[in-house]
Length: 267
Image (cartoon, rainbow, N blue to C red; front, side, top):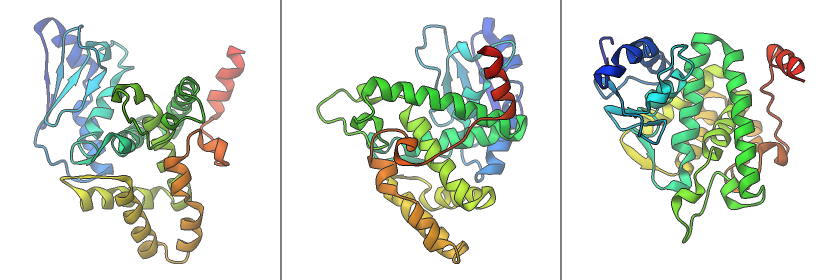
């Protein structure tokens, strides 16, 4: 597909896969531009038979993908973007246990939406975040807003780990990072994530490692605002408390002018 990107699939899926994933090289380049140099050589995506039960799985060097992402209108290409972003957060820097899963998924959703915004604009990314928030709230309703699985630090105990799986680490993790960006700005946020990846490359970590990077970065790069920013960043509530950020007084607005217009038409 390009200098560093490859698609592998059965002959009957190949033409459609090439069409649907025509921007694969561009997506990798954009992710690399936002993050740090891509360390894995070639990026290969394997489009599996229809029986594959997941949308995508970010194995280093060979992403597994469901053929459901292969659509003529390329509307599911965000799945490929997400799995590419896992090359940095999930494969290069990874969570040390599943209570810290948001370090894999929240970061990767944030990076995925940065790549999408660079192609389609910020409003496109905000609408994705708006829809993601609906998914998160529905998952929390299923668990119970006051239950541990509605937090960013699920404690599985004697349950099957899969019982804790939901969109919560994806979307609430994304919202935590988005909230930080509202405080420090887009340029500093990009550099903060790059610093995080460079510091912990090739290791498995828990969330306190990112807290330390955050505090060090703020002290060094925003010294005049450091005290105010750190006082507003309540890590204990964000990570350990169940429920939505809104329930803890954090207001994040993902609406756009066109979104409000389409909601009005739907109503």
